[in-house]
Length: 366
Image 1 (cartoon, rainbow, N blue to C red):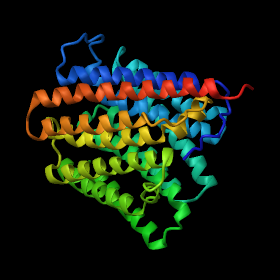
Image 2 (image 1 turned 120 degrees about the horizontal axis):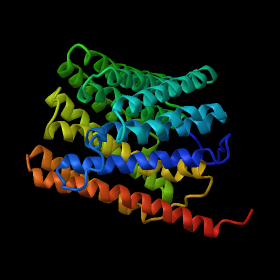
Image 3 (image 1 turned 90 degrees about the horizontal axis):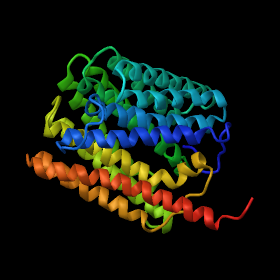
Image 4 (image 1 turned 90 degrees about the vertical axis):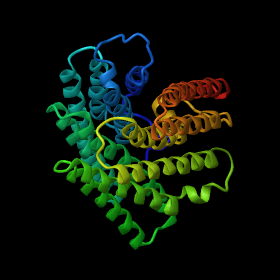
């Protein structure tokens, strides 16, 4: 995972690309509210259907590609987040094929970036993150080829889960985990990937096998991640650990629901499975890693503040409300939970922006 002290090879290059990712995030949030049934302006006819691609590829794909480009310290590496960022902008306005094409090219660029990293560092964690990028590329290719979103979403989910899991394995190197523990991690990754591949032939069976992989990966992370030790510490270190463990809970719940219900293509259970992972797991990770990642992108400090717990705790409560509405078939509860999810993300952005502003006021000149 990229360190906060790392500089980009392109000076101000990361800032416009981060702005593209944020625009995609805001568009995805608006689209999500429309899909939940809130009678707000549609803005663009294609916007509601673009919620998933905007969130996964336009926002998260651009953010992850940008992080990797900065880590590689090569200006050409920024083409990957540039393509995904522009592709995200096009999704809601022009025929989806153009946005999908650019996003697919961007995911190909990320695979190339990981190819370089894997050549430089032949490690299990790098291979797992490279596999995640490959799943994203294949999923985007299926999407570009006209496959329905519910058949593609497992590939996108694999991209995010394996990227994060690979990063956590990398950071746990300081624990000098026994070889058998690392082999177990690799086997669980293989189990999940087998489920993704199986979904091509049998979507229900593939979803159940992938769900089992997610559940076991969550258990592995709870048991062996370095965050387990950091829960006893203070300040930023403890905050990150709390974020991680809450995220692992949601990853396990998403896996359990996928294992129990299998390949449901739509509806409340489908919503619960996806948002447990995409929102509960992924955004808990983002909340925890933001004070480390954003300084490298913004090239400004993002000091930790205790108020960061406000968006973390509110995320958990709002998502519990939404998932309860899904599982108990309470559409109004689900709808209000979804609205609170959006407000939590906006609160997170506001807290980060305020922290950056406060950090710039106290940073020494020059």
